[in-house]
Image (cartoon, rainbow over all chains, first blue to last red; front, side, top):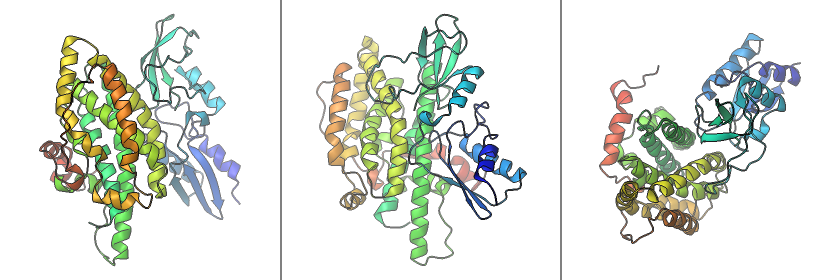
Length: 162
Length: 262
């Protein structure tokens, strides 16, 4: 009998191709693991609708499970409830920071349509100053915004709250 | 193609998202500054992602419909065949989405009118009795919040900016305003589906859109007199000449090398 925990720990080794320090579990993409006799069903949800990494993530999940002898795997994508950065694990946030990307704040402040909002105070992942400014709320991937630290002068990515 | 209203409604929404997403992607590599090039490319990516969910839903409905009618042996449609295999008269997108990019100001204004519509539209569609449409709307709505805020702020910056940017935004208003009425003018398939609670009742979101748009246009000093005359037809497949050029480029590879993959 396959244990649910075994599958979860295997999934923790599947990393996001764009942010390779985060596993699909850290990101909160895995919503549920179902074990029915010999069939595994993984319920997952995408981050952003257009995220081009999703196809690769699905393939990596299959490959990892296959390497450990799980051939009968069904991947089911659900859209509701919609993914939020609040599902990112605390461990994931620590890993992001160590990697040089500012982790998402818990506040859902920016998820409102009000104009010219005050910028969130984002901590620089390099020198830990809060004296930072937003360059663009759209960054190198859908999930990130671009910031610059006014103290150490370094630009950095912020994994924006969503 | 099935004649039932629901797959056509899903196609209408998918075509809106794909056509505007493609238009925005034409800016990739050409944006006025790098950060805004990336911003618009990100918005294009969201829209094309949303279009994929909607095409997948439409394809599923159409294939189920064909099977129920005993049309065995017919090649099933896919998200790709719907995007790359239909000609202009089969597209059901609003005319606003297909209008050529023009300058940065016109692109921004087109995005703002559309995002303001999509924001209130997806908010309502989350309550659709079609659970797949509701789920797509819930997911997409979060993304559109960013699009709406970004495009609103740019409309204000440019409209209330220099004499040059203000005059260009005025020209963009003249070019685009006449395509906004269609966003609230329901097609037959929308009327059929809004009574049973599947489609959004456009009359409900119209005042919300007007309020938001008026607020932003006033702040952008673009709130002057406008013609009430509105052009329509896109939802019924009667398009401006702009769509043909867009499809010629977007569909070229699949037309020249059908079903090619790489």
